[in-house]
Length: 503
Image (cartoon, rainbow, N blue to C red; front, side, top):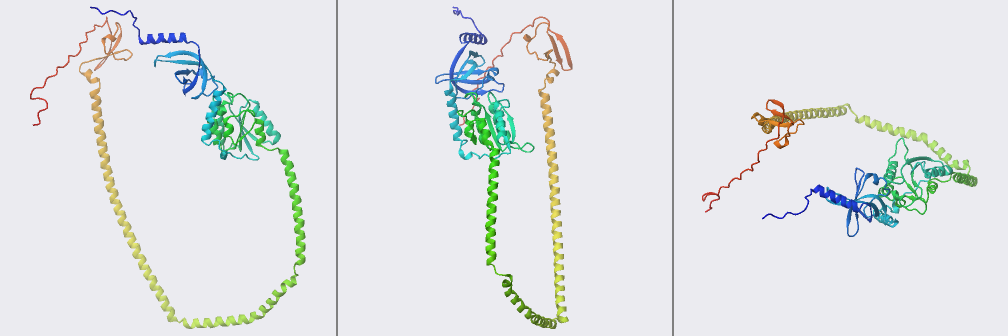
């Protein structure tokens, strides 16, 4: 009895996937979804792959490169967003995903929550610790400014510095908003810290930007900018936004300025005020010096009146000098008489026989020392010769061993090369051609292993053992039935075969 046939169309996997793709894209051509970002990945091609999830489900999403370049927000896991796009399928992994056209935060509350979470994380690492803050220099010789070169901020800073105290200013132009701005600001801070040589290293840094919304100032909440500010060895002033705008770089900077103009005022003092103060200090210093000199002059006059005269001071010294001059001739005569007596006693003891004995003892001692020196030199020379001979013998032994090792190594390498050549020859298809077979290829060099792959009229390249020939296929190939290999019968072991008895 024939089996009943089902009235279903047989589809391929690709056809079914394409049908599902059309159905889903027609039903969800334009959707708006709210959820939390997760598993955000920025691909090297510029595309962004992410997950959009809530407490019950997860939806894969993709942002193409052209759309990702228009998104000014740095996407991170945990950020709540609202996206608009179309739902489609990805047949390669049998899943559905949303292709995002627009993305925006789900209100300022989500961004503020992300800022607070990042603030707690960085504060736990000690980046906001007051002990890390550096004091600003009183009068920096060079000031580095990191800001946009086209905005009004740089003009305000330069104008304010010129009014208060003109200083040498180095400007590092960066983007202060949008994609890549955070990386540029962090690179500028680290670049200023690495300066030296022909370009002077600044004594003070100012990171400045005008006011704006939370999204516009988001680059200064990025972790890379905060870490660069905390690592800066140059004192840094944060002047981002207006007085009410607070970003994370304000906590990592050494000083926060409410506006860029206020940062310029913090950087340098007022030159006119300094000149007035210096004039006042100079006048006070001169007046104090004059009063001090008058007081010392008065003290000197009083001390001069109390001092004795020169004759009174030198009278006693003159008397001692007169007594010493009177005793000096007698002392010289007595000293000469004592030295004459000592010389006479020494001359009586120094006889020629005594001097000769002393010279003879010194000569014998000199001969003894010469003999000992000659013996020591001969012993040292013999020891050195024996050591040199011993090292020469060891060197010969090492040379012979090295020569034998090199010969053995070369023999092993020759043997391995010969075996590899034999193995290559054994596995080469040219050995098969030598036995009378031929290798059939297409004109593109592709080997043809089945007759079914050859169409009528196809040009062929046939390689024999002694050369190649060109040929053309005529007619349809005659296919021979494929005979499956006969299974080999397993011989049953006899009564005396197999594993015997151990007993």
